[in-house]
Image (spheres, helix red, strand yellow):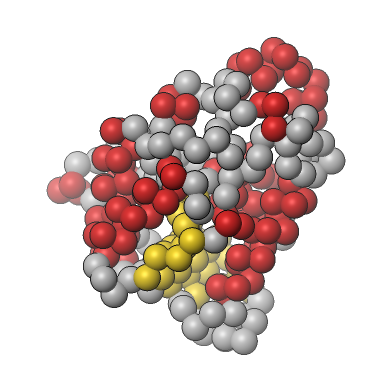
Length: 218
């Protein structure tokens, strides 16, 4: 990294979709936000605006990009919205459109192996987790080398887990042990090559009234 000053990386998962409601793997299927998801994103946007990001970087998939646009609207014209294909969700292949329960029933041991070892096991027709780590890592490298110090990434459960796994140098088996709700936030602090987890799955804004919304932890 060329910058030695502290950077805060803020990751926001997109708002709710109808497929989230039915616990279906979405992957690259371009499912839009439902009305609950839009309201979640609007509530998230109020917290993000108070945090004052310098740039918002989004996945190109509609559910993430719509969430990001609502965030940018709340932040004002001074905040640039950029789109990076590398932040797209994992391609789940034959599992896309199936619920977690259907995948468990149809793919049994393969599904359990994938949850325990996402690098060693690939969903049929899907994307290897190593490829996800690589493309998400390329986006992280780009912005860690950028002049921005307060960066908000708006993407997906899989791509956020890949980013956290890569940046914290965790075993890949940790990826599916992180709970991340719709519009939940993850904060990482970066000093040079040193990365620390600030918080995980902060979703206060979707669970409380506006009158007790707290600032994003610094």
